Length: 217
Image (cartoon, rainbow, N blue to C red; front, side, top):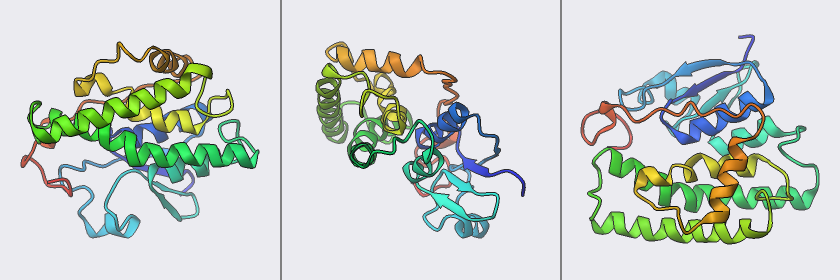
């Protein structure tokens, strides 16, 4: 294997964030599409790559594998402009990577996924709870970005890539962004970065509830 391989799902924002960084680093790789709703992660071969049966997986040229999107971002960004050397900046970036997975993804990405695929009705109590959480996330981000251009140290980094991946999809979860002007300006700054791409695709029909075979039900 001469190039690293990215096992990913085209509609996953966790996978998208890795593709975005790879594009901005101009790193060549082989892309291996995985249909997570057609049993693609349920095979024994995939379990050997990632026992958690999630995407993305980055398999290095030497055969080692990395799982969890933000861990992959950290690995790829090490020694580049996307991950500053300063220990304080490291800690701040780690803070945002944790916040993204713990708060941004469930509140915004999770709501979007469940609405689009019919797992939640828009007016269900579960959707209302996540929608409230999403507005709390957006208010925090908007306040943080009121006095800075990017999340950490006035410099575009993997913190921005990680948080952008799901947060920019808030309108697809029925969330109005009109009250979050600083956040919206930050979204524009991210899209203006060199080699920005958005190849995220919508969820296909087999992602609908009970339509496919996956770990997501």
